[in-house]
Image (cartoon, rainbow, N blue to C red):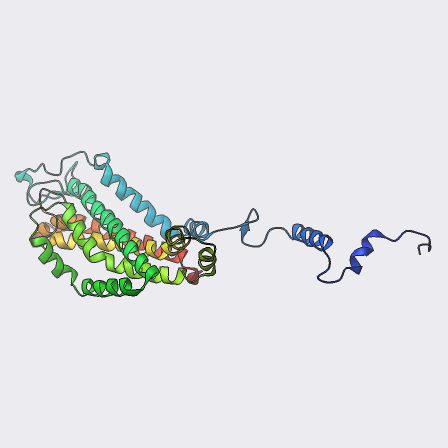
Length: 327
């Protein structure tokens, strides 16, 4: 028991502080308690992770993403440098070996013209990957631009874009390809890319419009507008970074679809044309000889199926990582 003359104990002063009137002492006590508890759950190094860091964290632990990414990296590699895995020329043929089966140095056999099926299968990845990537990039850029502006400004621009998108949605893809590509004399990849972009941007525009309409209602956008931010700054700095995730998901899945569409158009004879090497062309040439030489159809069809499946699986994994509702 302290004597009456003893000085008061200093730490008892905090018991006399009333709620709301603690001043600096309340702040110090709160900071001390925070330091004792450590960083908040889900924070790395005391900093909250963004949507993109969380998505990358999930993707690295997703076996579907890892498997599909490895396949896609390999396909892109052989599309850029096919000579790494195929030393022959896809246009060099020997009619004496037409429809022959696998031989030493030719594991996939020969086609109806005596061309090496393995070499043509490897070189066919270049056209398919080029069409898929370029068509996806063009559709995503055009659709995001038009859809984002329509969702942000609304009014007559939004109504006009919606009716225009409805018109393109009503065009059957194969029928549109037959009409559009039949009048194009060139059989290169660029007319096919242009046709896919022409019919592919409405889907992306609707996704981008909905994402922008939702993002512009958020409090941080309203606060930036109240502080004097212009339309350009609002779109580029505040709305676009938070509305781009759905567009990325749709574009990733659509890439595999566009590769299959190119093969379909080439199969019916209006897409890529010889001397361009394409899986669709090889499948079309082998379709009438499936009984006599099934290897001619098997390998390009398998390469096409694996490629499309890899991109669709990649898109599904990205969707699961970027959609907060699926966490």
